Length: 145
Image (cartoon, rainbow, N blue to C red):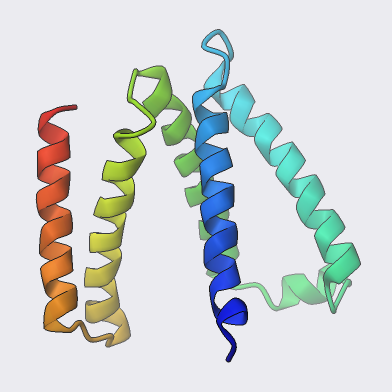
């Protein structure tokens, strides 16, 4: 596999998460956070529909519903909670440089544990040291928040 094919999703995630966090922090303070999330999902649903119609292989909704399991439903519920929490995090005064850093580092540690416990992934000593440094970093950053 070439490097671009392997790394482009990471680059896209980095760019999109950056714009996402800037946008979440820029929601007007007078705006209801739930209205902001609702508008976000109207835009996201429209974009997803267009992408599906242009790039999707099977465009029959009933066929796709027949293939449905729990994952897209849980993803929808949890991403809504992520959106609401992000908007409230900024409305409550978290700095963009601290709040998301703490969340992302803590998430990386939680997912590493889940990977080992439920997906039979293994971690090297170097990776375990990295996780330890991440935990220490969250503790240090949390003290100043």
